[in-house]
Image (tube, rainbow, N blue to C red; front, top):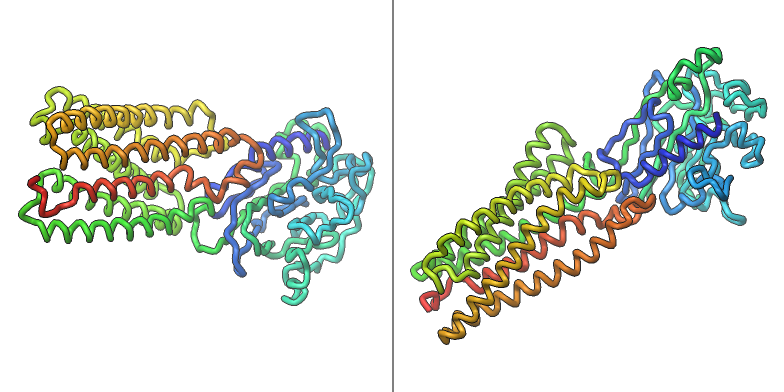
Length: 502
């Protein structure tokens, strides 16, 4: 039984340690057998992790809460050759007999701290938790049929260590001292978070049902333990249901909204000032500026709604609306760049069949853009297979590359024609446009290389702990900022002026 416990807990660790929490509040169920929930935390003097259990919960649990930087101390190495079970995580009767822990820690997680380092110098809160109504004087039989014995439980009126006075709490290096002996659950367990980081809560049942051996063999592995049900609440610096890794998007899109509003105000003033000189292409640009403001408002509203109400049917519909707006903006922008680079209304009056090809490419880019925008929000990158991720990324990469290559080729051809005709004013405009696009291609290439190296380690157990603060930036933030600067530069070149007729 002890080896089975190690196997299940180790497997759960590899699958769940690196997974970002999908919601602000995460359930804990006895069907999970061993369960570890992790999430990034933005901290201040009021942030905490609250673990609560239903009144019907029974039995004893080994529980530990800690910040990821101390993960190396969790569990004791018990095999140098076993790749799948290198550590023993919970102090069981077999672990005591093997010398991996002592009887006083039976039913707790094993902490293998180096010499000179105490638990007060770590972020660990560790306890053996008993629920009211459970047999708190558990016998040897309750701990995996091993006669090693159990620690003597303290009185049932054990009080929570988090009710100590503030001076004692501040004087301790670790603001979350672990309770001695048995912690009888009477109220939610609160873990104070005073430093921004990646925190985990792990729970493993350590007692079995008082049932005959033949009956146990007929039950599922998770049914041999008393039932329990609870939840983990990550209380960040913000109030809401967004994971900490996504919350920066709320402020980011608000700032982008202000940027585009300022750009729109400047553009509207120039249009008003030179209303008699406005060209057709500037009408299209005016529509795109207004579309961009609507898109930023939609993105801001979506993440605020998600923070308040969490995921549901309404948020999914909202997500598709935002994804359609985002993909529409990209497709319209690339289409406009392409027809301008082809020399429409400057070198040629009509593009003929080339216009239909450009429309087909724009439609394909729009569809793949919607799929990508939905995918980066709905998929969990640590657990999703590489093939599925490629299905969302590769089609969009092909249409994007097609647009960029076609635009650059067309722009070179248009510049050559303008140079041959000695139309120097228009030539300078298209040359500056070429510089902007080359800069965009260079930046995209650099970030593609950086992202490739970053996501290549997504299956590592410490990937989420290292990347939770910046993943939103790698997936979404830098592209939005790059687009703003590129669009602002192009809008400046084609701005309304007194020389439009030239």
